[in-house]
Length: 285
Image (tube, rainbow, N blue to C red; front, top):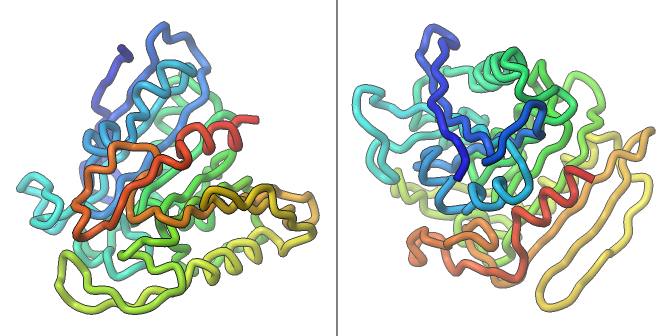
């Protein structure tokens, strides 16, 4: 098994944390995947749910799993009670520490990890689930230390404005049967506040992100079978790759993971694709 350690640092006058996991047979300058949990999640739960620890050991990947913030930092996190969240610009950010700058925190983490000389800036990638997907989009827009590529899963672009056209290879995975992120958009009832929230359509995230990448130059369908739809785009002056994968019967779950979120809230899991394999094949090509 790999080696895990807790990282602690101060960011924005707050003590912040992350789980760093080195693969077995670790040697210096392995590639690193940053994984951002969803609302109500934690680093350890996300590692278990996605089973990325096993995947990373097989492929020699360093995993970095930062922790968001929660309303009461003196108590431990829970999914519904005192949920841990990211300030991705969505309504869910209100459940964490008010005004926290998570873009800055992630930048500080990247600086710290780079200083350890266990990886290099050209080998750092980021993925996130749900609220963590929104934070992945936001850091790609606003972060000082851009990662090499991103992979948001089951989340939406929070409409932050990049200062210039981005050139970040992106793979975006969504379920077409997600009750918390309706594919066509619409109202949902938040599991945390029990209040209605209006979610934009997945197509609006795709359109906004391809525009952030400089606009689509070419687009072609890779596959449309067994309920899996894959479209590849080349965006901007330098043909930045942007792949979307949508899965017909996938609810609000990490595809190919354990699918342990409450089915009443999150819908059905699906193993029609293995998200970790698809993400790493795309990002680390």
